[in-house]
Amino acid sequence: MTDMFEALRSKLRRRRGLKNEQAEWERRRFASPSPAHIKRSVLLRLGWPQTDATWVETGTFLGETAEMLAAHAKAVYTIEPEEKLYRQAAERLSSEPKIRVMHGLSEEVLPKLLPTLSGTINFWLDGHYSGGITHQGPVDCPVRDELKHIEANLPRFGDVAVLIDDIRCFDPTIETYADYPDLNELVDWARRNGFRWSIEHDIFAAVRKKPSA
Image 1 (tube, rainbow, N blue to C red):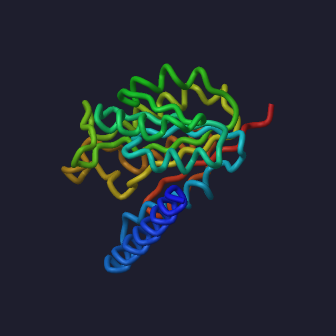
Image 2 (image 1 turned 135 degrees about the vertical axis):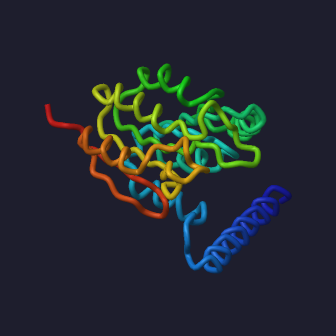
Protein backbone atom coordinates (compact mmCIF):
# COMPACT_ATOMS: atom_id res chain seq x y z
CA MET A 1 0.00 0.00 0.00
CA THR A 2 2.86 2.37 0.85
CA ASP A 3 4.43 1.77 -2.58
CA MET A 4 1.12 2.55 -4.28
CA PHE A 5 0.74 5.87 -2.44
CA GLU A 6 4.37 6.80 -3.16
CA ALA A 7 3.84 6.09 -6.86
CA LEU A 8 0.73 8.28 -6.82
CA ARG A 9 2.58 11.12 -5.06
CA SER A 10 5.41 10.85 -7.59
CA LYS A 11 2.92 11.03 -10.47
CA LEU A 12 1.27 14.11 -8.96
CA ARG A 13 4.68 15.79 -8.49
CA ARG A 14 5.51 15.16 -12.15
CA ARG A 15 2.20 16.67 -13.23
CA ARG A 16 2.76 19.77 -11.09
CA GLY A 17 6.26 20.06 -12.50
CA LEU A 18 4.97 19.92 -16.08
CA LYS A 19 2.36 22.57 -15.32
CA ASN A 20 4.98 24.84 -13.77
CA GLU A 21 7.29 24.38 -16.77
CA GLN A 22 4.47 25.16 -19.16
CA ALA A 23 3.38 28.25 -17.21
CA GLU A 24 6.95 29.59 -17.09
CA TRP A 25 7.33 29.03 -20.86
CA GLU A 26 4.10 30.91 -21.50
CA ARG A 27 5.35 33.81 -19.38
CA ARG A 28 8.41 33.92 -21.66
CA ARG A 29 6.05 34.02 -24.67
CA PHE A 30 7.30 30.58 -25.76
CA ALA A 31 10.86 31.82 -26.29
CA SER A 32 13.80 29.39 -26.29
CA PRO A 33 14.70 27.26 -24.50
CA SER A 34 11.60 25.08 -24.55
CA PRO A 35 10.65 23.07 -21.44
CA ALA A 36 12.43 19.75 -20.97
CA HIS A 37 9.32 17.68 -21.65
CA ILE A 38 8.83 19.46 -24.99
CA LYS A 39 12.42 18.77 -26.01
CA ARG A 40 12.12 15.10 -25.05
CA SER A 41 9.04 14.79 -27.26
CA VAL A 42 11.06 16.28 -30.13
CA LEU A 43 13.82 13.72 -29.58
CA LEU A 44 11.39 10.84 -29.86
CA ARG A 45 9.78 12.31 -32.98
CA LEU A 46 12.93 13.29 -34.88
CA GLY A 47 15.18 10.42 -33.82
CA TRP A 48 14.88 7.05 -35.51
CA PRO A 49 12.01 5.35 -33.65
CA GLN A 50 13.00 1.70 -33.98
CA THR A 51 13.10 -0.17 -30.70
CA ASP A 52 16.39 -1.68 -31.89
CA ALA A 53 18.00 1.77 -32.12
CA THR A 54 20.81 2.85 -29.81
CA TRP A 55 20.94 6.31 -28.25
CA VAL A 56 24.22 8.04 -27.37
CA GLU A 57 23.82 11.06 -25.09
CA THR A 58 26.51 13.55 -24.09
CA GLY A 59 25.68 15.41 -20.88
CA THR A 60 23.78 13.06 -18.56
CA PHE A 61 23.01 15.71 -15.92
CA LEU A 62 20.34 14.12 -13.66
CA GLY A 63 19.69 11.16 -15.96
CA GLU A 64 16.05 11.98 -16.69
CA THR A 65 16.44 12.07 -20.49
CA ALA A 66 18.45 8.83 -20.55
CA GLU A 67 15.75 7.17 -18.48
CA MET A 68 13.05 8.33 -20.89
CA LEU A 69 15.00 7.25 -23.98
CA ALA A 70 15.59 3.77 -22.56
CA ALA A 71 11.85 3.11 -22.71
CA HIS A 72 11.99 3.48 -26.50
CA ALA A 73 15.37 2.03 -27.49
CA LYS A 74 17.58 -1.03 -27.45
CA ALA A 75 20.31 0.67 -25.45
CA VAL A 76 21.36 4.08 -24.12
CA TYR A 77 24.94 5.22 -23.56
CA THR A 78 25.12 8.48 -21.63
CA ILE A 79 28.35 10.37 -20.93
CA GLU A 80 28.82 12.72 -17.98
CA PRO A 81 32.16 14.43 -17.14
CA GLU A 82 31.16 16.00 -13.80
CA GLU A 83 32.03 13.55 -11.02
CA LYS A 84 29.11 14.28 -8.68
CA LEU A 85 26.51 14.24 -11.45
CA TYR A 86 27.99 11.03 -12.84
CA ARG A 87 27.76 9.27 -9.47
CA GLN A 88 24.22 10.47 -8.85
CA ALA A 89 23.05 9.39 -12.31
CA ALA A 90 24.85 6.05 -12.09
CA GLU A 91 23.13 5.31 -8.78
CA ARG A 92 19.74 6.48 -10.02
CA LEU A 93 19.94 4.43 -13.22
CA SER A 94 21.64 1.36 -11.77
CA SER A 95 18.46 -0.70 -12.06
CA GLU A 96 18.00 0.18 -15.76
CA PRO A 97 19.65 -2.66 -17.74
CA LYS A 98 19.47 -0.74 -21.03
CA ILE A 99 21.47 2.25 -19.74
CA ARG A 100 25.22 2.54 -19.38
CA VAL A 101 26.40 5.70 -17.62
CA MET A 102 29.97 6.60 -18.63
CA HIS A 103 32.29 9.04 -16.86
CA GLY A 104 34.57 11.36 -18.81
CA LEU A 105 34.77 14.05 -21.47
CA SER A 106 32.72 13.18 -24.52
CA GLU A 107 35.61 13.99 -26.83
CA GLU A 108 37.65 11.31 -25.02
CA VAL A 109 34.91 8.70 -24.50
CA LEU A 110 33.38 8.74 -28.01
CA PRO A 111 36.53 7.57 -29.88
CA LYS A 112 36.51 4.44 -27.70
CA LEU A 113 32.74 3.88 -27.65
CA LEU A 114 31.68 4.50 -31.26
CA PRO A 115 33.79 1.76 -32.89
CA THR A 116 31.92 -0.76 -30.71
CA LEU A 117 28.49 0.31 -32.01
CA SER A 118 26.57 -0.53 -35.17
CA GLY A 119 23.05 -0.42 -36.56
CA THR A 120 20.62 2.46 -36.06
CA ILE A 121 22.13 5.19 -33.89
CA ASN A 122 20.60 8.37 -32.46
CA PHE A 123 22.88 11.02 -30.94
CA TRP A 124 21.73 13.60 -28.41
CA LEU A 125 24.55 16.10 -28.03
CA ASP A 126 23.90 18.18 -24.92
CA GLY A 127 27.28 18.10 -23.17
CA HIS A 128 28.21 21.77 -23.51
CA TYR A 129 28.87 23.82 -20.38
CA SER A 130 25.75 25.58 -19.12
CA GLY A 131 26.83 27.03 -15.79
CA GLY A 132 25.86 25.92 -12.31
CA ILE A 133 27.00 22.41 -11.41
CA THR A 134 27.64 21.34 -15.01
CA HIS A 135 31.21 20.51 -16.02
CA GLN A 136 33.41 23.07 -17.73
CA GLY A 137 36.04 21.25 -19.77
CA PRO A 138 38.89 22.44 -22.00
CA VAL A 139 36.24 24.03 -24.25
CA ASP A 140 32.73 25.08 -23.29
CA CYS A 141 31.24 23.25 -26.28
CA PRO A 142 32.73 19.94 -27.50
CA VAL A 143 30.28 19.55 -30.41
CA ARG A 144 32.94 20.10 -33.07
CA ASP A 145 34.97 17.15 -31.75
CA GLU A 146 31.84 15.06 -31.19
CA LEU A 147 30.81 15.51 -34.83
CA LYS A 148 34.32 14.64 -36.00
CA HIS A 149 34.17 11.31 -34.15
CA ILE A 150 30.64 10.58 -35.41
CA GLU A 151 31.71 11.29 -39.00
CA ALA A 152 34.68 8.94 -38.69
CA ASN A 153 32.37 6.08 -37.69
CA LEU A 154 29.44 6.70 -40.06
CA PRO A 155 30.39 3.80 -42.40
CA ARG A 156 29.71 1.25 -39.65
CA PHE A 157 26.29 2.69 -38.75
CA GLY A 158 22.87 2.23 -40.32
CA ASP A 159 20.27 5.01 -40.08
CA VAL A 160 21.61 7.92 -38.03
CA ALA A 161 20.11 10.99 -36.34
CA VAL A 162 22.22 13.72 -34.73
CA LEU A 163 20.31 16.10 -32.46
CA ILE A 164 22.11 19.06 -30.88
CA ASP A 165 20.61 21.10 -28.05
CA ASP A 166 20.75 24.87 -27.43
CA ILE A 167 21.19 25.86 -31.06
CA ARG A 168 20.54 29.50 -30.12
CA CYS A 169 24.03 29.49 -28.57
CA PHE A 170 25.87 28.50 -31.76
CA ASP A 171 27.05 31.99 -32.62
CA PRO A 172 30.74 32.45 -31.72
CA THR A 173 30.53 36.18 -32.46
CA ILE A 174 28.83 36.41 -29.05
CA GLU A 175 31.60 36.41 -26.44
CA THR A 176 29.78 34.00 -24.12
CA TYR A 177 29.66 31.41 -26.91
CA ALA A 178 33.12 31.91 -28.38
CA ASP A 179 33.90 28.16 -28.06
CA TYR A 180 30.81 27.13 -30.01
CA PRO A 181 30.94 26.32 -33.74
CA ASP A 182 28.87 28.53 -35.98
CA LEU A 183 25.48 27.22 -37.08
CA ASN A 184 26.78 27.23 -40.67
CA GLU A 185 29.44 24.73 -39.63
CA LEU A 186 26.74 22.35 -38.44
CA VAL A 187 24.82 22.78 -41.70
CA ASP A 188 27.98 22.15 -43.74
CA TRP A 189 28.66 18.99 -41.70
CA ALA A 190 25.14 17.72 -42.32
CA ARG A 191 25.26 18.40 -46.07
CA ARG A 192 28.74 16.90 -46.48
CA ASN A 193 27.57 13.66 -44.90
CA GLY A 194 24.20 13.39 -46.65
CA PHE A 195 21.94 14.43 -43.75
CA ARG A 196 18.68 16.34 -43.98
CA TRP A 197 18.61 19.05 -41.35
CA SER A 198 16.04 21.17 -39.54
CA ILE A 199 15.67 23.20 -36.35
CA GLU A 200 12.86 22.73 -33.84
CA HIS A 201 12.52 24.00 -30.26
CA ASP A 202 16.17 25.09 -30.08
CA ILE A 203 17.33 21.68 -31.36
CA PHE A 204 19.39 21.20 -34.53
CA ALA A 205 18.36 17.88 -36.08
CA ALA A 206 20.34 16.11 -38.82
CA VAL A 207 18.86 12.83 -40.06
CA ARG A 208 20.27 10.35 -42.57
CA LYS A 209 18.97 7.04 -43.86
CA LYS A 210 21.69 4.49 -44.52
CA PRO A 211 22.91 4.89 -48.10
CA SER A 212 22.05 2.02 -50.42
CA ALA A 213 24.93 -0.32 -51.18
